Image (cartoon, rainbow, N blue to C red; front, side):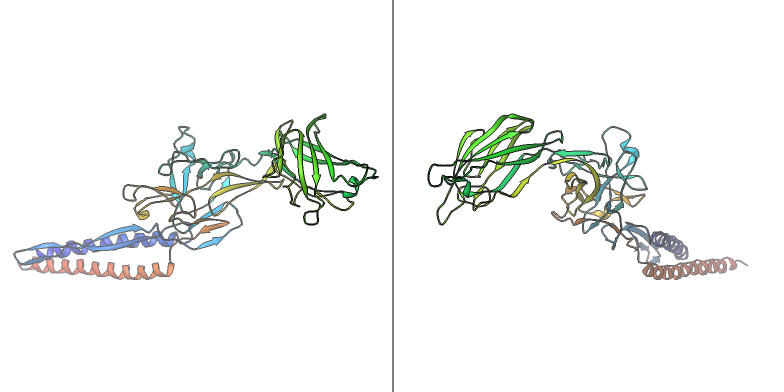
Length: 433
């Protein structure tokens, strides 16, 4: 009968408002939880078709939705590996117990922020046991190509703070001025020497010893030098010898006019360099192009190593780790060298709100969320990764308290309906008296 449907509608109203109050309680309780995504409760009416023109109350049903795509405000921190996503996208993480299984399955979860620090094994983890996932870099710092629609290439980001690293020298540049007066007839013809340090394959310090010998003519000026190179590992062996001739014209005076190769790698006029083989392997040495003044020059009466540069580095200890906005994890060593060791992608889904919510502000992709794709941070639809930052809860306490008042009133009103129906049923029972 119609009065019974009124009772059922009142009970449904109590249940729905109790559900809404539960979501409000959850939101308020997590108002200070970093990365928390608030829960929204919406009511949907239930309509039951009338029978014979009589109306039956259908009641109400509550549906809850976690607003995962809603971003909270970012706050700065003092930890370089406190990470937050600014914009669209989620950080891939896994649980430490899953990593200990040893089957290679990371069981990827997603989160929008995390305070990561190294554990006993060097993994970047949170206090709740979440480990950051990323793609490992090659020894040269390049990131290989991985599949973007699966998490199979992701590995736990591991930082070895006791790691030593060194990079061998493969290229050096000589910016040296030779005295023009030494190639003039009657000059003493002093030999000029220069030792340029390089780093071997094992991080040892060696040097390429360069000797410049002027050609002193009987008359006039030769503008010619013989450059001889040896390796400190075996100084008795010449690794390269070149005849340098300098221009003395008004427009190009002091620059290289020609380079003749006597031994060693051939001089390439297109690059201004040649290759010599030291004990650890080949090194490309740049002395400047013909007619240019950015390498070897012959001016005035002074021998001056103006600019000596080289790549490579000695062995150094890791001192810090940071994650840039593109998700690259950079390790910095006390030698000043910075090396890329991982890349953390951002995971995007068509319907983030369709993911399954889990503990510790983590989410799991589902059928409702759609297939995920791993983007480079700041690429495609994704935002960027911010270090030294955390994302605050998306809960607005003032709004939740207002909703609580509305829910309380609605609950009381539904309880009043049940009380009224009870009184009406009591009157119906009294008819038989």
